[in-house]
Length: 388
Length: 195
Image (cartoon, rainbow over all chains, first blue to last red):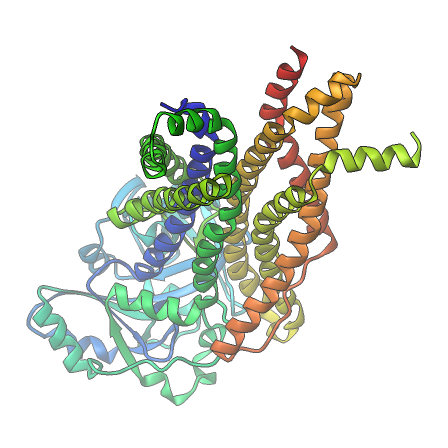
């Protein structure tokens, strides 16, 4: 009844809104996902009770004995992490026992051999791309927080599909040296458990199942606490406190404490984007009425009620807006993937990999359509009132 | 061109003040997002410069903040899409309502280029007014929201600021978005008044 071109500005706005919302929501959820898996996507990560994120803490090696013999514990990987600077790029260097690490990680070798030893390192595929290194190359890793450095020969490039792809993997002693850790300490312990009961048992043995984290007042928060990188001697006695968290809890802690400002900002901006678009949408509806007024007048003259005309307008708009929203979602998601691949999306020195889920899709596409539909209805009613 | 001619050109370009204000406000409401996010992006940069005490850790902090800033920057670039779409809608709306005025002007002897000049002047004025209001309101909004967040989280209050380069960048992009967004409706309008 109405030519499709009359709806072009409205549909264009739905398209643009969907792109912005998809981009924003993908960023928000994927950042949370990147943080939740920042220690690896296994079932339990044991780390210091006073560190903001798993990587920054220090825990005693004695914990391995406490949980190692428990029923349902399938494998344990104690790891030492250090932030290092390689060619002015800061990234994590993870010290592991290759056999234990492999039992918890689905590691696929892309180049070279899977061999670790003194002065040897494996490089994750994204880290390799960032540093432009290949198997056989040498790299000099300078500790980002201590006057220490170590040279490594790259034995291979690996891919895991997890956060380790952004890291350098070497032996535990090398990582301890760069971080300044004592021999009987680690940064975190990753544990693979067979069942939820085994998980509860581990938590019970560690005595952390009911511990609540009290948010600290740290002023303007950076994504992690720099103070937790201080040498062990300078850290407080409460360092002995430990906690064990699932990836989701880690994300909650890290987001809740470390990047609260960023997350709140993005949530607020999502609402503000919708609110800011109201005025443009109002103009788009007005423009539609300017163009469609002869048709609407004709419809009125042959006896169509206002409600009937409104229903026709909204139905017609929906038919055009849904494909526009789908196209907007695809475009927004593609831009997000490109931004991630260009290295624009990084948090805690790990790449944020955009991931899609049903709620993200429904929220990003349905919200602009419903929101615009409501505005079309309200503005049209207002317009009819003024005309009559 | 005399001053009175310029005044007449501007008055004719603006047309209905109410409509012009509404349209400038629409542009401003979107520029608020970009201006506000830029001001917030400047907070950690300013804070870091003040916190020289971190010494050896500064490069690490900068690298961490840099990641967050890059994310915010990529987000603010995407918001320009909305500005672009808004300009398209506004230009199309303006031209649809300007049709009768254009016909009248043509009838009394105005050339097609003069009429197009009027539309272009209007769009540039919209961009400048939208930029002035949007960047100021964005800065105020950023300060209010940051103050609110600081109050809730008990953090010390830092002042979100806009550097002169940010203002020029926003003006340049606002005018570019306005010119690009109005190209298609202007082209159609040019054809329509040429008949």
